[in-house]
Image 1 (tube, rainbow over the protein chains, first blue to last red):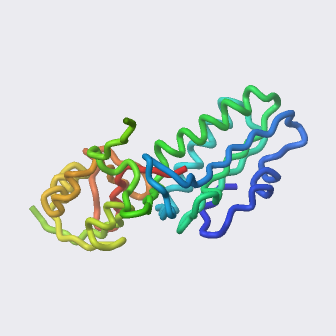
Image 2 (spheres, rainbow over the protein chains, first blue to last red):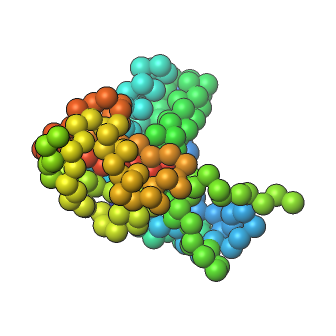
Length: 143
Length: 82
């Protein structure tokens, strides 16, 4: 199952879809909206997706992971629209024979989603807004 | 070179720069690289982005890919999902 959805993600449903009786491990990553970034208070995030291409890209990532780690089941769901701190933005669930494969596959999938899949988020904070990763001038203040 | 009407989809910050999620442009661009050059001239704010990719028919396209009027062309600014 690959889903891009404007509705709240049913985490248990994603896990159930990925589960398999033959698997000894189910690994789940849940990405949530933080209430802070770069010392700013985040009010909400606006997510948008190029849905048809996002699904196609996620499918390619899953196929690679399924082959490399012999996955027995998998499911990915990603939210779009307005998300407030604490809300679930993305869920990746995989099942495999053993825990090591499940951890590695799950990490590979979420890392690849963040790097390649055409989904964007704009951070709306107190006093402004910013498309994440869009501009090279974005300075992360760490002093 | 022949000018053609191309339909573009734009997302995220590129959507804001182009002013709409779907834009029609008149372009003589034959390949993805020509289209990129034309867009950077027509919309100078795109030059301020860290990078942008062009997708043709829902796949990332290399600069030398030929484009046609029926292709689904999309501007992909740096992604930030997850």
